[in-house]
Amino acid sequence: MPIMLVNILILFNAVFYQPVAENDAKPAIMDFETFQQYLKHENDTVYVINFWATWCAPCVKELPDFEKLNQKYGDKNFKMLLVSLDFRKMYDTRLIPFIEENKLSAEVILLHDPDANAWIDKVDPSWSGAIPATLIYKNSFRLFHEGGYTFDELNTIVEPLIN
Amino acid sequence: MKRIFSLIVFSLVFGLSLSAQGYKVGDKAMDFSLINVDGRMVSMADYPEAKGFIVIFTCNHCPYSIAYEDRKIALSKRFEPMGYPVIAINPNDSTLQPQDSYSQMIVRANKKQFPYPYLLDADQSVFKTYGATRTPHVFLLNKENNDLIVRYIGAIDNNYEDADAATEKYVENAIKALESGKLPDPDFTKAVGCTIKYKKS
Image 1 (spheres, each protein chain N blue to C red):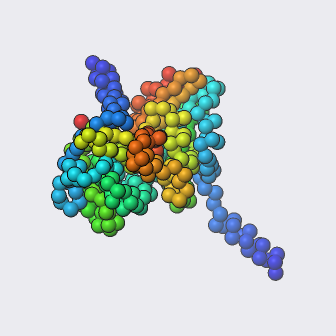
Image 2: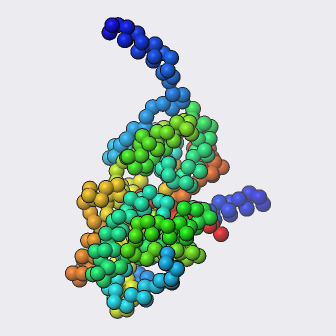
Image 3: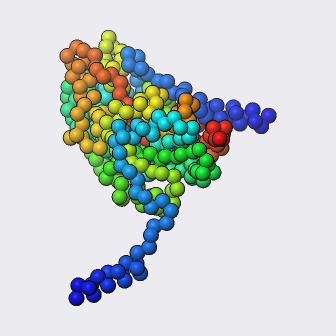
């Protein structure tokens, strides 16, 4: 009887389980201390770090442009990180479905550290805390921008940094 | 020529976000006259007895503003009787953010029974003068020799998600400091928030 049950389960899984396409790794959840490492690599890689949230309309609007950039340079010395500032309780209900629906290819993480005053300046002293905001850096080159970007603007900045 | 034009556009777009300097702690704040959700115009001059004001740029749609809604109500109930009324101002352009329209403000104010005025910065001049960049964004003003002096700028506390988990109640502590004749410390904090939606003219 138990063997039969296992068989049914295996059959059930084979029929109904379909792997999620594309980026099926769940975003890591981290506090600022863990996240900091992404802000200071010195390895010739161009880092494009975008701070966003699913409920932030201008952020969502510019995401396709970031995706396009990631598609263009993803196989070069380039790394994009989409840092979600969604609330922790929105992780399953908003963030995961959003990533699946929009088939985001860039890596997403959830930065969960509500004491924002303690870390905003460490991203960039010019940041007021409003999103969207984007940090682009490569070794000692550093450009922080509070507000939106278009693909052309991003490309103008990134292209000369690609090897 | 086209290239020069796009360069100008590029620098204009980028310059705008940098040009919003606004008030710093210690600056004299200007009064305003803005429409409230009850249809009346409200100014700080309408409160001759006030010792100061908790001016909060906030809105309907932003999850951070919503997360702080009950805390704004609590601040108002606690500090208005002490002479520091809360005045909430929605700076957003409703053509860009329909949830923040005047009619939606009225709906929200009625639903939550805001004990404070909830004003619309219809021509978006007040938030620019103050230098608000996000919602929610607090400017604590203190009346000194009949001037309103900015004494604290920033967040309400240090935990947007959970009021009970906040270990630093910035606005509350700032008022307590003023009440005991001291200057707030810290007098400036940052917080994650929603950008203010304004027409780039």
